[in-house]
Length: 372
Ligand SMILES: C[S@@+](CC[C@H](N)C(=O)[O-])C[C@H]1O[C@@H](n2cnc3c(N)ncnc32)[C@H](O)[C@@H]1O
Image 1: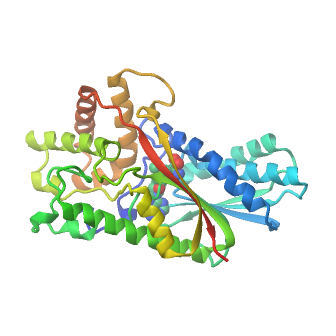
Image 2 (image 1 turned 90 degrees about the vertical axis):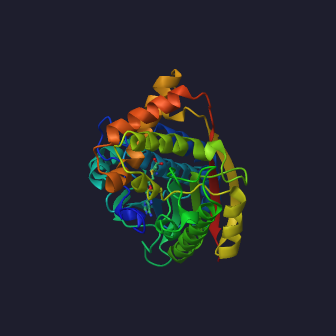
């Protein structure tokens, strides 16, 4: 069956291009998380710059996607390093920047925007900026991507909550204890073993992510990661599960209308997990390659995808549907086909518009230093 047992890289890609349905046009919420991460990024880079700097600083952004956020993240890091070098009186470094995402990512749109980006960086930072050499690196960050000890600074924003795959245990639909009935992510009605399977998958994935990066990052190098997570141990808080519940209800409506089969829905789960902050801390300590410099929780408002505009509930639901669709469309299409997409997201809008809950969206920001 499609999706289940497949690696996420085979089914996940943000909607490409710059059109109305694209991730580029529907990633205001992720931009809000990125902006709130800047103080932690700044502190990590200041610390990094107090060490003996190499003539060329190598930065990698993991899960860069395509759109304004892709270059926003790396532009911030390069500008902070450049400014700091100026302030402490050392020569500005050159930059080697690697933009990583899954091979199906729309790298072409990113590459087309690079000449304009390089020009803007010179204008904003001065003629002594850079140069910066930018390259795309297609591949999963759950595998090796770079030569040993070749990276100085790694950043990743709103990406690490994607698991390498849906937990394999969930593909056994004959085992009732593993069927996430009518749901597509962890929900209050999920059997305990489903919740455990998600947690185990996260632990395996996060631990292997840390081990792989520990091989690639030079001793003393830094890594700043921002991803969706929980500030409470309860695995079902509305702030983690509500949007997935809305989408699950929209799917259930399609089942009752006979547009999709019930078994088809029961066998669809999302390769996504929002870990509890203390589980993240424990996994970093257990893996052991990095010193935990900071672990913070940042919170974006429930309507962050409105890009700072105040809209009524229905318009907000429409904006949320577009944001959810830009991220989930490829996976839904791979499992159900694309005929259901419009009906599904119309149902999502109705369900969200009828409800009254307004939940915040917490993200974990983790700043790590590679042990020597
Ligand atoms: C929500 S987007 C975030 C993009 C961008 N960093 C931002 O802040 O807007 C998540 C990105 O992570 C990528 N991603 C998910 N799993 C990945 C993996 N295993 N390896 C590399 N990229 C991955 C997705 O393809 C997607 O482009």
